Length: 520
Image 1 (cartoon, rainbow, N blue to C red):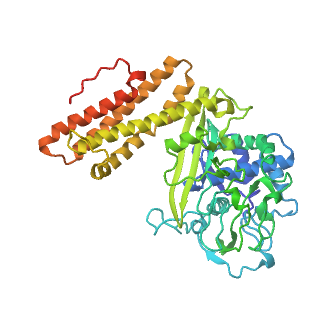
Image 2 (image 1 turned 180 degrees about the horizontal axis):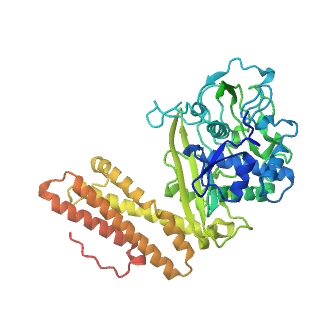
Image 3 (image 1 turned 90 degrees about the vertical axis):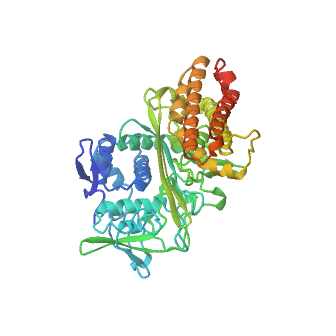
């Protein structure tokens, strides 16, 4: 039956590289010691689902047990987890496989106990949320010799991250629409997955009361949604739920035949959790930033562009966004150590997947002030200035590219469609060159205190951007068919346009004594 509270089947690698098999209470104890380096069976797109599940379940167990901090010992974890299901002395809700009429892990009871109309699935990656196109990128239904933790991770990902996928296949409530996604943004201290889980779990305990001020949850509401039967036609409303409720969105039951686990699934006539349409995914999910709108706010949806520096800068600067609660540094957290901002999302489309996006940004100790409400203004000012300057550098490069592609004319045609189309890929390349160290340079400037230091750091960054723009221009020169008669003229005038544009945009403030030798 694979009881998560007693059976040791969750594979976890330690710092020494050895793989151990742990029961869920033992895993929590190992995570609190930061003695887990990874999970061999966990697929990359399942990371946020598994992390959020562990944090939510751990916080719920501690809150219901009245514990101010998570316990350290496996025996204590077993006790408080078991206490969440007092009506089931045989631990049925913690079993991967069980009778259909009683709850199993993340599997609500089926009224009547009959699986008529359920569709069989043979592998956990068939059950999983990942949608691939024609098996080109990542093959589906390939885990034919799946272990129990393969099914565990697939279940957690499906039930807590899936969106709408056709009639009868409703998605979770914690996203803005059926084709959106549930992003995960939070601060992680130095260490492995355990340090991150421990930090987010403790912050959930601290943030608990804030949720009730903004949402209609109940302190004693339903937290483990698989405990109650679901006929597929009824929905739960927010005022029935705990703020950290662990969601289920699909009717699924795991079955065991001849020692092998399989699954049976069916559709539903209604979503399991029903928020008003106006909520737009604003459910208080502690990992999801909110995008402000004229009518209120909506949950962030990460598209195929992922966490580029422009979008992420707007989020961090609170420029049209409210930070996810777990992005903020709490009053009890250590300020003299670096943190990492972890950003994860699986971009979804209509019947397709548009990319797994994960970005980790180191936030040095002195820049942590920007992750508090008091320090937001400085970060907003500096980041928006830098985004605008990167955009200006792109416009300067565009003019130089247009000059090159038009063979260095006396009168540039700035809207010429042919040269504009040719410039597009090179401008995209430049923007990608700005992205990797954008936040490292941003936080370095936020850390210094004097205006002279800030100007020096900004000038160094601008000079590097100019160098990158020049390298892109050289690539365009080398690979572009230019009239041989005017090749030298085009090259020289393109270089001159880059230098002149840079000097005009940035010279007075950052390079007041810069000498250039433009050739017309």
